[in-house]
Image 1 (spheres, rainbow, N blue to C red):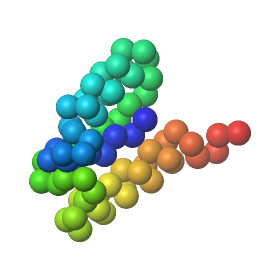
Image 2 (spheres, one colour):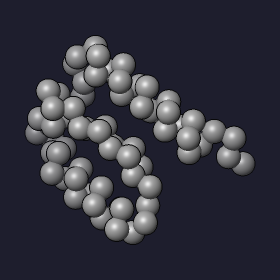
Image 3 (spheres, one colour):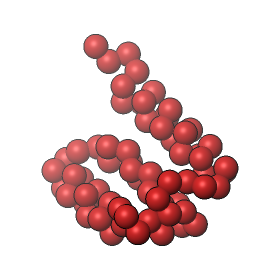
Length: 68
């Protein structure tokens, strides 16, 4: 699972994302996460939008590319 989370998100809180991350890791699942300290629900800052897209592409390349 890839978690890209705004730390100031009041709809889906950082704490809830961290709980999910902890549980999944304990179950041996692959979890990568990044928390954007200056964002809420959705990413308003252009540099964070670009970073999130780069992380998403890297995740797909690492875990889904050429999987049959």
